[in-house]
Length: 444
Image 1: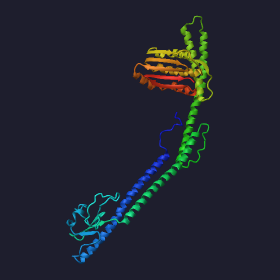
Image 2 (image 1 turned 120 degrees about the vertical axis):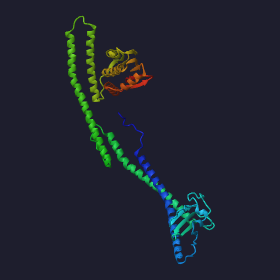
Image 3 (image 1 turned 180 degrees about the horizontal axis):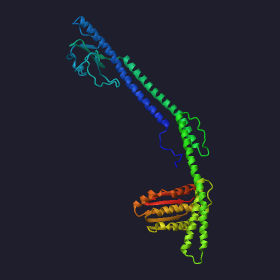
Image 4 (image 1 turned 90 degrees about the horizontal axis):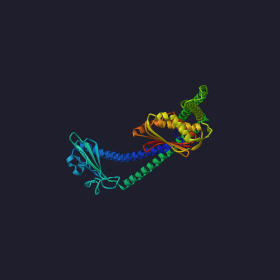
């Protein structure tokens, strides 16, 4: 049975939501910042392309009227009719193997993000006495075999840099604000979800066989309400199943009492009818075993009824001699190891405990029977200590121990032992020590 107070190492839902919202906000801010830089350069490209296209169109019109019209001469702009005329400083920056008309090339001569030169080249006084920060090349086809190449340079003014710095601050502020908004949304969303979840948890913990119709209350969300109703349905089914098993066990136990009483009476009658002066020891032992077996079955039925009722009223306790009970049980189970290479010892003198005798007998019988059944060869030792008994199985080889360990935890007997020990608050331990299987019962 799982302890309802057990806490597994799982991530709370609120932290999951907060993490997802924070990651989403961070990704959105990074993408937005990246796109802002791209759109900034794209805007510069559009403005420069429009300016150079207008310059090229004006020259084309002037050339139609006058074939010898002078090349355009605008500020920070130089015009060339042949690729070979373009200075090598600019040619090597752009791919001009197969130029297309109205094509704009851009080269960043500085790193705007770092304020330090990255691949800075000499721009040959294109921007007067300073080096151009951005260099453009615009290709324009005038006719079938004639082209116009415009080289244009840009230098940022103090006003432009202030505007860029201001935009960066705005972007940073917006990014931080966006992250905070996302975290606030995540926090409130987690609270909205967590409240009905807590209500569902409290309701499920309060659900019991004595109060199966406990009101679910308002869980706000349809999925949680459906889950609660399914939990209630499963609980009702499980409760019905348990009640059915209890009823069956109660009826079966009561039905067994009559044939047991008949058997006990008949055994007593047979003993009296066959009574004679010189009865053999084997006959006396046979009758004694029958009486003991019938008594054990009656005690087992009473114990099962007590466990089934789950009553807090414990069975009547008696002054039980552990050594005497062990000797009697070992004698009854001795046939299980008669033909095996098993050595058997009991260490300890008489020790008395106040406990229900039926429970003591059932626990010890099942543990000793298991020890005898699953030990093909080796050593079995039982140690009696104050208010406790330890049964130790030491097989002759490790393979036998592995098989013993695999089989030992199964069967109705051990389930019954576990339940009896739990209900009577006895300490039951079952572990492997130094190549042996040790089972210990400490009576409270």
